[in-house]
Length: 156
Image 1 (cartoon, helix red, strand yellow):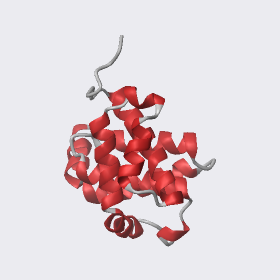
Image 2: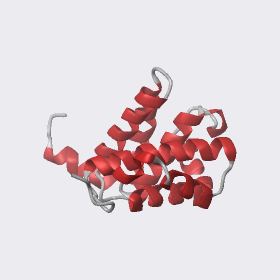
Image 3: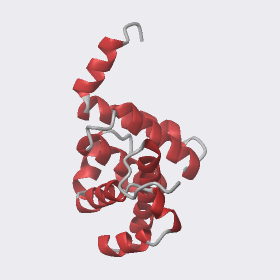
Image 4: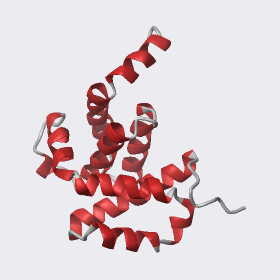
């Protein structure tokens, strides 16, 4: 059974994040324009399985607002943004963009997805770093959601 291209299932969004991460890594390495990246990744064989609207929102949000995102990320780091590994940098850009602009996605989902992407594509223990930084980001960007979650699960 073929999934409709606009499917917003968790799997389609996960695949959108993965493809967006690959495109953002390439963008960092090559400086390609947003239209070039969109066109290239729309031709990817896995594109039929993604939520294309979500993929494009993530990619466009990061590329167009990377300076502001880097400034935010810099607040939660123990080193300059310029010293980040390119994969970790791309994951953080993606995660912070999703935390701030896609409040319909629970923050725990964003953190988990970014940790899993880092486990797959990043350095051996990079996922621990990503989890710590995005947890700090979520405390600021999703404070109300975190407080509500804490009230629902006392003792944690």
